[in-house]
Amino acid sequence: MEIKVLKDILSANEQIAERNRQLLDSKSVFAVNLMSSPGAGKTSLILETIKMLKGKTRIGVIEGDVSSSLDAETIGKEGVPVIQINTGGGCHLDANMLSSALSNVPLQDIELLLIENVGNLICPAGFALGEHKKVLISSIPEGDDKPFKYPLMFHKADAVLINKIDLLPYLKFDTQSFSQAIRGINEKVEIFQISCATGQGIQEWLSWLLTQMSRR
Amino acid sequence: MEIKVLKDILSANEQIAERNRQLLDSKSVFAVNLMSSPGAGKTSLILETIKMLKGKTRIGVIEGDVSSSLDAETIGKEGVPVIQINTGGGCHLDANMLSSALSNVPLQDIELLLIENVGNLICPAGFALGEHKKVLISSIPEGDDKPFKYPLMFHKADAVLINKIDLLPYLKFDTQSFSQAIRGINEKVEIFQISCATGQGIQEWLSWLLTQMSRR
Image (tube, rainbow over all chains, first blue to last red; front, side):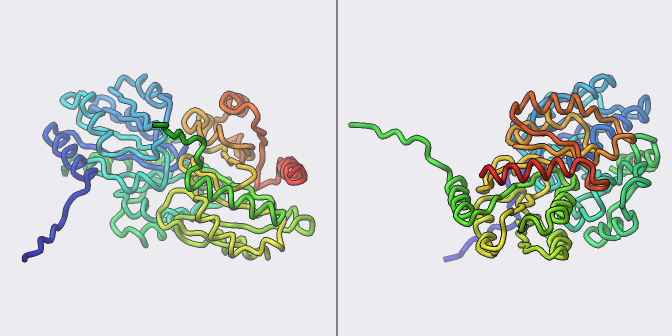
C-alpha cells in the first residue's frame, strides 16, 4: 500500500492570508502590517505617513485593538478611509479578521493599506495577514535588549523603525548594539532611526516605503 | 432522569494556581505577579525592591521570558535565588509553569517571591499563577490611553505603578486622566507614580508591599 505524504499544506490562516494577498494584488493595493509593543508609536507613524504622503499616495487604514476605537477616530480625522477591528481579547490580528475588514475598505480608491496590529511583541509575529511587508516599530524607552527577548518578531520584520530617537539623551540605549543584535537574527532587515515627535528619519522611512511599493 | 449541573468547576489552570497558593501559604511566602508591556520596567523594579529590602526581607525571583535569561543573570548578581522560565514562544506564564519553577525555589529561605511575567499587556491577565497580588507596571512613554485599550489587565491589577515618571517633562502624558481611567475600570486599585531611575515613589511602593505581606 502506498502511503501518501502530504507536503506544504498551508494552515487555514495561511490559506486565507494568501487569498487576501491575491485580492490586494488584483486591486494594486500594497499592504503593510505594522507591529510593536503597546505605545511604541504605530498610530503616530500612521498619522505622520498620511500627512507626508497627502496628495501623493492614496492611503487606507485598518486599526486592530483588543477593545476601543480611539486610534481609528484619531486617524479618521485625517480624511482617509479607516476600519476598526476589535479582537475582543485576542492578542493579534489574523488573516480572517483582515479578510472581513477588506470587504469594508474601498480598495479601488487606495494604493497603500496600513494595518495597525494589536500592541504585542509576541503573538502577531506568528500570523500572516496577506500583507506585502511586515514593519516593526521598537522604541527607545523599551530598552536595547528586546531583540534577545522577542527574537521571532525581529526575525520576521522586513524593516525595524527605532522610534522616539529624540529621547536618547534621557535614556540608556545603545543604538549600535541594538542594530547589531537585530542583524544577528535577521540579515536582510532595514533599520531606520525615527522620531514621530520631531520628524527625524521620516523621509528615509517614506522613501523606503515608496520604493517597496514601486517594486511590487 | 435527573440532569446534573456542574457549577464552579475550576479550569485546569485555576486548580494548579490554587495548589501553588496553598504551597506558598504553607511556607509563609508572599507572591507577587508583575506584569507590563515589554520594557516598562519590571526588571528595574525587581532590582530596586531587592536593593531597598536587603537585610529586611528575604526575596526570591522567578523570571518569565519568551527566550533568553538576560534578566535572571542581572538579578542573580544581587545574591538572591532566581529561576528562569522560558516559555519557548508562549505569550504568558501559567500556573503549571509556576508549579515547576516553585519546586526549584528554596521556599523555606524566602518571605517574598517576585514573579516577572512575560512582557505583554494582554495574555498574562487571563492566567492566575497562584500569586497573592497582581501588580501592573505602566510607563509614561507608552501613553495615557492604555487603560482603554487593554482594559482586562487594568481591571485585574491590585496595584498600578506608573513608572518612568522622570520622563514626564519630555512626553505628553496626563497622569490625572490616566488615573481616572484606571479607577473607572477598577475601583479598588492602588496607583503609585514611580521612577526606578531616580528612586521617586519607591518608598511608597515598598510600604504598600510590606503592608500587604503583613496582612497575609
